[in-house]
Image (cartoon, rainbow, N blue to C red; front, side):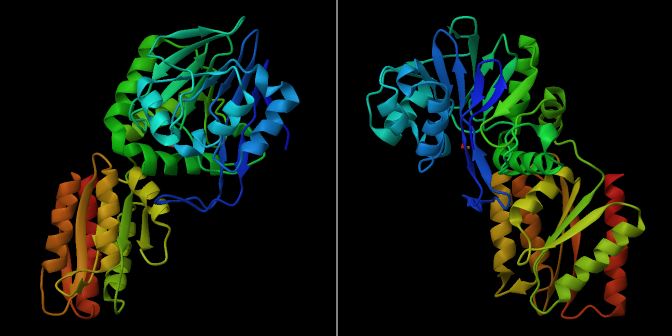
Length: 391
Ligand code: FEO
């Protein structure tokens, strides 16, 4: 696949990873891209590189446009290896290039690669003139590492945002209007799993960008497609990071002898009866990344588990640990589950964990062994009642 021109003298020279299926705790069923951008002017700059293993793909694209030895600046917006892994090979070819990064980036690159590249640390507001084009840097600490930064191409009105506003989707298309709804779905998931834990910083950064009154025509992240509707994209981050959500419920559970599964179904039926959208996920047959995406969009989260060995079912315990790391803001929650001889135990443990996450806990329901008609009706009524808490 060749380099792709995205604006006058600006080219995508990244790589497509069609077969990536997980990235840490993150499932990536649609693969991803590692976006690097080459800017050609009197001086030549490369914004980010690609993951190690894709160096040749990136260098081949750069060579379609210029000799890599002519690169003056390699702007490393983030030191995580999916963006910096190709930097050693690039620096061998770009013999005169100076690395531009934040101070934290400079330290992180040294920790990752142990090299003495000629590196300049930049701060928010620092500028780099390439000729006709001017780049301005914006530190983006904890979006999502201490070293992240954005680069704003003033004349072309492009915000290069690295991980922020990214999506894990492998596609030959480079712009959002060339792909379907999948890009926005993956964008939501990406925020949920990678960014939402830093929601306070997202709020502050968007406010800062608004105060800078930057004229942004496109947002070019380091994964997935380029956004041509920056207002929609910034608005989505603003909304999700504030904890604003839909009147919608997510149910998450595991089950041993189907009792907790039956409870989940009956509770969902009660919620549907009240006209509220709901999705229920069995932890052993669902993609946990997808569940987190649903949770970000939901106002009420219900977690169900049977009691096993005086504790939660292991998958439920694991999921709560995962959720505790992400800490979605401004959610209400409740627990449910079945037991044999430990009434209240699963509900108590789940609710304690939900409180630690910061959710507003609304109570719970449990039943002994098997949900017969009477207990099913209780679960149905529980669903009807609990959903009224998110009117
Ligand atoms: Fe934080 Fe795409 O790496």
